[in-house]
Length: 422
Image (cartoon, rainbow, N blue to C red; front, side, top):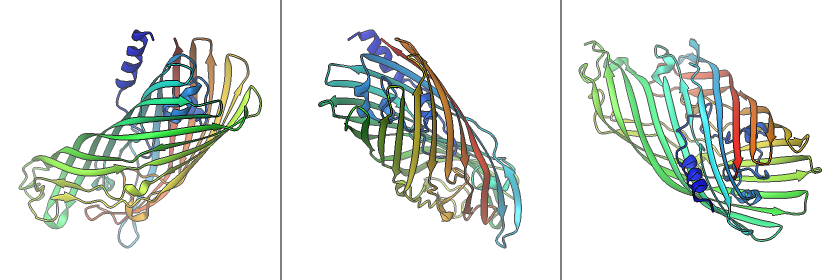
């Protein structure tokens, strides 16, 4: 093994920048090729990003490979707010706040039977922003979840048909939530900010089975991950005697919360029509029911009225859901290839569990891409369009509306990847 290359690969994976996704917690944009094929990329040949899409397929990598990928996501959308009588009281749009999904991967073939790989990529992330003076801001005017998973992986090829992998997951989340706290009956008008981070451990396992040279199936399981978040709490009053936070004084304290990120199953099928063209199908089951609440508890009162602001309860009760994807890859020659994909994401957010942190309904993603490769290097680019369905959700106790309707939402996607073999 070239120790310098190994050190460089590990550094590239572990030092990947923090990321923020868009339009939903679940991130599937782990490489340009993966974006181009709608996320249906579990059986790629000689692709270091297999660490993310299907760890059992790192046995398809020959030698030593490093890869980096960067995906740009730009969310757009509109909303309407209604009072208790169903009358529209506000309409607006989100502030366009683009996010980046960055992936770094390293895979090395140890011998004919064993492989080692490591990746750093986002599984869960989001960013959303709305006008600070809007009524929507009483629910959330800025929300960001930075996320990255580092996944050291061992894979074994048993024979020509079977391969399997197992890996650990070191998951990082950095959470920032900002909202306006308005309680007219208590004369309260101010702004709150919660900002913190957490590390937690999980694991994954995968297996592939090849029926013959043209047909292959695979399955990947990723465990749930429980985060105990410790955060800084900041409350800023308006300095108006008629509408203070704790007598017009700013409040600084600590906040605590527990969030369980869901476990998931990927099931994939690969069919090679010939040496140039192949088709992948993929279904992902995500157990979003683990995201039952986002309750945050404070060690200081924001407004000095017991039982009102010593905590920020927020029931979610999301339902489990499926994501379906299809991807097509065609090689025009030994150097040039084109890809296309489509994905459909079920909506998992109930009426009583929605908010302006993740105002997302069902999602349809259309994508295309191209790749160039020679014996040492691979460059790929992809473009995608995510049509985000509408979502209706109820207001919370301190929101300045009773119900909301998010609509005309979409996300622009652009991605580039570079891979080098050693």
